[in-house]
Amino acid sequence: MVKNLILPSFLQEKKEENPGSVEFQVFNFTNKIRRLTSHLELHRKDYLSQRGLRKILGKRQRLLSYLSKKNGIRYNKLINQLDIRKSQIR
Image (cartoon, rainbow, N blue to C red; front, side, top):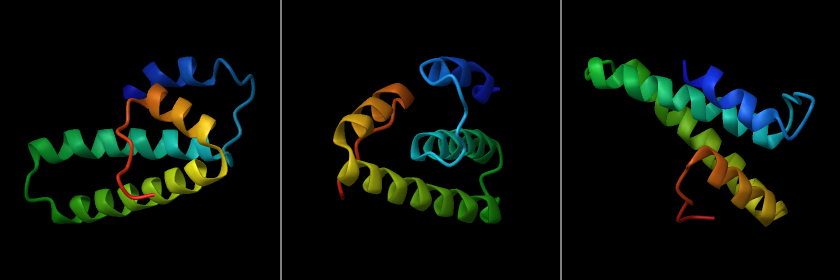
């Protein structure tokens, strides 16, 4: 599972898991997005999952926009760690 591979390297810098932090939320949304994307490759007509994916993408985009406005250094670090493209709209 993707979560098990990325989680230790992502949280090694922070010794505690803070589920309320923006980084942790974006990390969880990214794992859900990757899992749903692989599901939709097999089941192309699963429209309910497509809707859920779009909702999660919007939530992650809003969180990343908030983080980029509040702290650009943390934003860039998170983008690089999770290998996410920078959003065109900020």
